[in-house]
Length: 145
Image 1 (cartoon, one colour):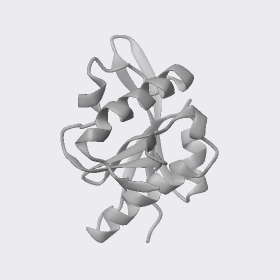
Image 2 (cartoon, helix red, strand yellow):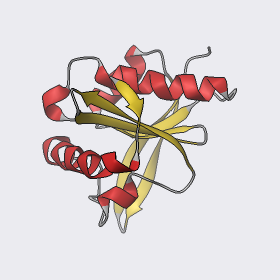
Image 3 (tube, one colour):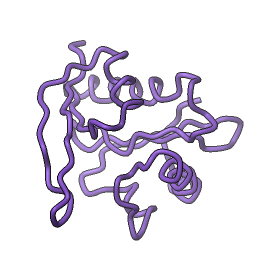
Image 4 (cartoon, helix red, strand yellow):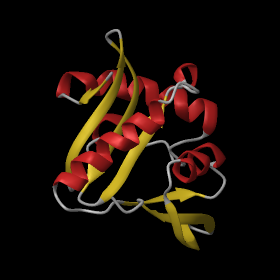
């Protein structure tokens, strides 16, 4: 079930994020305070995927940008990422917004998810994510409603 995230979910979200980071390296740099990282400046809404009372995934909406989307390794392959993505799209659509996002080009599972759901790649660029650290990032736009 996809539902709105509440403050009592944050520790569980951070624990799932730690599993994701260990398994697939997301986020690229582990945050000093994962709970705070899950509540970025400009946060509009956030959702969790809840499997019988256990948080297994998360996404956030910051204005018109999808952010902090991840699914725990044990819960992948069940369509949860797509359902989280749709929750953000529906909320944005109700506000008349067309969503965008950025993803590392090496995050093939995420790239496949967005493209499978009709997101359009609008550009690719190299960004500096740290001193001397260049990362290639794809920008996507949600499909037209």
